[in-house]
Image (cartoon, rainbow, N blue to C red; front, top):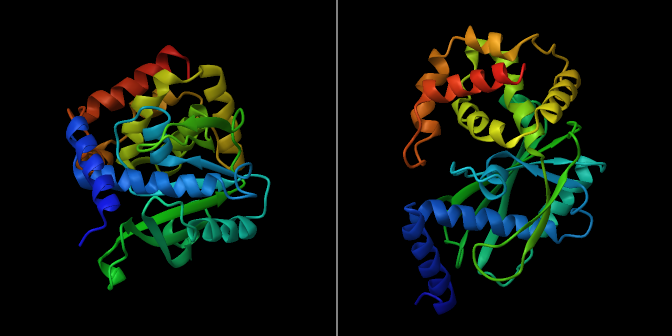
Length: 277
């Protein structure tokens, strides 16, 4: 028989899914990722040295409607090996929330065409783990290091999906998120298939400070060894969008009233033009 407390959590998540017109699977995944953050945020040695970024930060901090299935972070002023050890220790603990994490493996992200870092793979779920863990959902934590954060990491206090205990965590400022999404557009050009970045840029740019965006761009491009275009507006105006357009449906499939790809791309160009970027 299902644990009544687990059933209660599941029922509350189903209610949230109905209210948000999302699927139960989406809401459950976001809840499970949140519980990972809750564990990492209270682990001694991690709070000041692990800065979260990526889709989950966009969703929970900057109001993005785009769901995600992974967690992204960078080490901040601490050895990455020690950070990875602390992450594994944190996710091995119980918070009495009926959520479990089981470590599976790790890989070097350089081999995956990323900018460097380590990907930790976990199985996770609500209730008891299945006898065959291959049937459990897989969850990735990507850990990078060294990337500049402009102006500096932001301390965020987040209300949990369920319960009262707030989560305090360090996250990217929106300007660094923007800089790290503009960079692959320039580096990869028409080979870029990161359609989700177009949605994120269209969503995040209006929330940002143009002066801080410019500083974040300079820091990010300099660190990654690339030249900043004289004009992002002109660069993007001449961009071959075909590959990004093909991936748009998959990248925005969980979003209600999905925006038009070209309208989103054009809004980025217009923002850059208005702000002389």
